[in-house]
Structures are given as structure tokens and as C-alpha cells.
Image 1 (cartoon, rainbow over the protein chains, first blue to last red):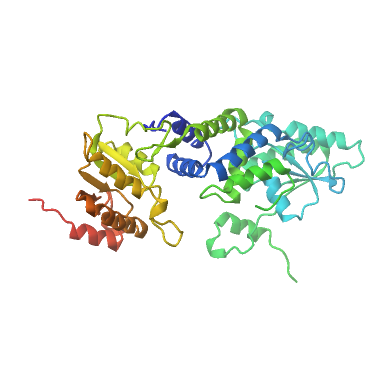
Image 2 (image 1 turned 120 degrees about the vertical axis):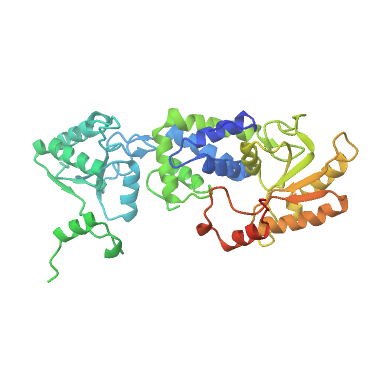
Amino acid sequence: MRANSQGTEIEQLLYWLCKMPGFGPRSAKRIALFLLQNRGTVLEPLIQAMENARAKVQNCQACFALSTAPICSICGDSRRDGSLICVVAESSDVWSLERGGSFKGRYHVLGGTLAALAGRGPDKLTIAALVKRIADSASGLQPVQEVILALSATVEGQSTAHYLVDCLRPSGLLVTRLAHGLPMGGELDYLDDGTLAAALSARKPLA
Amino acid sequence: MRANSQGTEIEQLLYWLCKMPGFGPRSAKRIALFLLQNRGTVLEPLIQAMENARAKVQNCQACFALSTAPICSICGDSRRDGSLICVVAESSDVWSLERGGSFKGRYHVLGGTLAALAGRGPDKLTIAALVKRIADSASGLQPVQEVILALSATVEGQSTAHYLVDCLRPSGLLVTRLAHGLPMGGELDYLDDGTLAAALSARKPLA
């Protein structure tokens, strides 16, 4: 941020708003102006919400999803199927899958994907905790039977999936991944060749 | 925002992030996740910056621009030409014009543009204060001699400009507006017809 003549508090606010992903000087300016024009109605509650989230939100000790309790509501829900673990990269992926509501098992949040160039090796992710969690479950009431890798169909997501398959092989568990194919409502004309090829090779018989 | 099962602090944060202009559930989720993953490095300084801005930032008593002092640094700068007042809609317009650095006069921030449909009549803007400021200056050291209307070339901006011209007519001052024409680097092919017509009618002799 270029310094402007409007005093340090505004400069500081713009500087820190610019740190957010997808924010540039222009969007930071727009948001700062909006916040300062709506102090009582938006800025104050937003500060309070951020402060509360900062103080209360932690990672679930079992699945590492963001949670306001040491054990998140999904891991603490005895009606969820503990024999099914869905591995995702981020907490937001849990929210996306829960929105659909079709998955009844539990989650494991890796905390990102492997990215050698960015220095994110396997030790930066919760892979060791996943392996331990699976091993520990074998002596419990609900041993894990299937691990679903719900990772993005990107180079990073798929290389993380490959690495996980290697880590999980000794456990002898069923390891699956999400299907690749046409998205609902997707038009053939607008699909990339990779998706088309994947959808073709994974075609299903209709009759 | 649809409620999710991740506890109220995260929900609240998402709810308030969604209030920001240009934010939807998806961008709010991305920002919330980023903030919670970077608590010490971004979230805490951002909360502090927002809190400081909330407490310190006010409107300059002379020009109504956002300022950290009762009189902003531009109005308080004796080297600025007080006989020239540039009228803008928002404080961010002041920042944009100052970035260029070619204007040496003072500003007047209206606090928006006239918008009958949104219920923003002349009494919601600082028009009366502008007229009074000009009248008061007549008996001072630097009487205002020219008012530049730097308003957007939109229907709202131009109707506000027309209204201001009517308000300022009794003062007998020179009232000007920004030139309309080709933006620097603008290609004819990509320009709308309105801009082209304005540029054509305001053409300048070269030799």
C-alpha cells in the first residue's frame, strides 16, 4: 500500500485489509470506506465477531476441523458412522460436504495439500495423526473400514491423494476417491478435455 | 447465510463478513478460513486496525473527508490553494485524486450522490455546508474562486452536478467539471458511444 495523507489509522486498516486473499488496494479501499460509513451497524459487530472467533475457534482434536469445542460437533455425534472417514484438505471442504448432507461418516482435515514448491511437506499436514487415528480405532468400538479421499482434482490434490494411498496401504483399508465426471448441469461444450476423458473412461451402463 | 454445524462463533463471523460489499457466502468462507489460519499474523492486527479506525477516524469539520483529526491534513495545510474547491462524492475520490498529486486546492466531500430512488435527497449530502463554506470564505483571507465538480460520469453523478450548479449559481463563482473524453491508453474500438461522442464534441485543435 502506498501511504496516503489521511492519517495512520486509515492507512493501517487498508494495509491489513490488503492482506486478505483476493484483496487489492481498490477492494480494500471500498471495504474500508463501507466499514467506516457503517460503524455501528457493521464495523462494531464485525470486530466483535472476529474477536470471538479468534478467542473461541480451535481445531477439533480428533479431525482437525475448525470447531468451538475441543471435539467438534461431528466427531462428538454418536449417530455419525465412525467406520467411514472422509479426508479433506480444509475445514471449508467439510462445510461444503455437510451442506449437501449426504455423507454420514466422519471427517479428517489435512490442513492443506502437499506442495513441494511452497515448502508444504507431509509433516505440515495431519497425515501422521490420520494414520494414528485409524490404528487406534482398530481396538475401539468402531474400527475405520473405508477412507474416502475427497481432494480437489488438481495436481496438488491428486499428488496428496497418491501420497496418502502409500501411507494407508499398510493398514489394508479400503481407500476410495470421489468420482470424476460431468458436473450436474454441465454442458459438454464448456467442459475441458480432461474432465471429458475422465467421464468417458468411467462411463456407466444404463441398460 | 445458511447455518452450519460448526458452532456460533464461526457462523457469526461468516454472517458479518457477508455484509461487506461484494461479499457472498463463498468469499466470506474463504476470508474467514484465511483469518482463522493466520490468527497472530493477520487476524489480530486486522482487529486492532479496525478498532483503531473505529475509534479515531472521523469526518473533517471543513471538507467532510475521513480524517483522524477534527481538521484533515489537506484542509490544515496552508500551502494548499483555498480558492479552489474540488467537490467529490466520497472520501475515496479524494484519495484517488491525491494519488495523482496534480491538484493543489482543497476538497469537499458530499458523502454520496443524489439518488431519489434510494431516498438520498440533497439534505443527506453536505451541500448546505458547501454553500456556507463558500459564503464564509468571502470574508476570509482566501475567498473561493472556482468550484470543480469531480463527480462520476454516471446518471447519478451528473444529476448531482446539475443540482450543485443550481445551488452555486447565486454565488456567481466559476463552476467547472472534469473533462470527458478518451481515457489514457484507451482504444477507440473498446470505447462506448457516449464517450466517443463526448470526446468528438470536445475535440482540441493541434495546430
